[in-house]
Length: 97
Image (cartoon, rainbow, N blue to C red; front, side, top):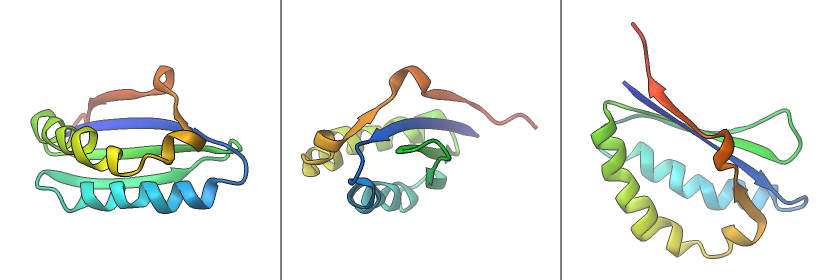
């Protein structure tokens, strides 16, 4: 099982918008073949979130990324105005056992 963690920082006052807007992406991932789980987690750190995705394999994840970057994110142009992905914190890996 492949796991992807994506971290975000959201400007103060925009948390509700981010949760609503990004929630559509989380739901779309859940509905995609090969997705085991997709969850947006509000972290204890102020204005920080992590998107936790679990996929049957990396190929299924990569297939979804084509949809994510090709169609879903471009349909949410405002999200980049108040949220930043913290790429230096992102992580990928495989479940052991």
